[in-house]
Image (cartoon, rainbow, N blue to C red; front, side, top):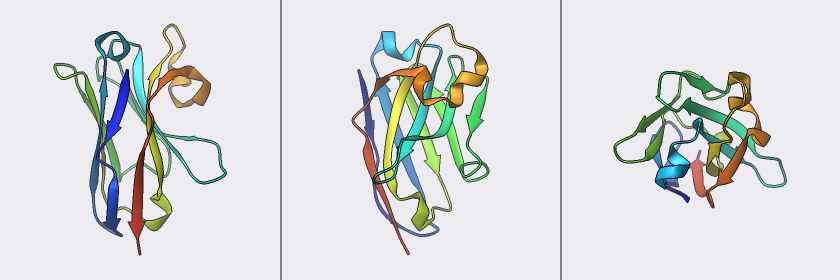
Length: 125
């Protein structure tokens, strides 16, 4: 129901755009988010967008470098990542937010219930 693409290997300072394609019902959830996971660590919030694209949310590490957007006609969410750093190296996951939760929940891992399989992003120094 959710599938990420666009990961790969990039040099520090470079850019990547991740895509997340979702089925219609999943894409119509309250919002979509991107998380990332470092080896041996819990997934952490990166960015999220609400259902209509009116509100976006970013982690401190993503602010100013990453941009989340959605194309509702294509049922796709994007994460444009610029000025990438080696510490951005991780598996990136897309997820759909559970309905009926408050806005603050956009940054919370447990607020999401449909997950993709992830896409690897590797930033070389």
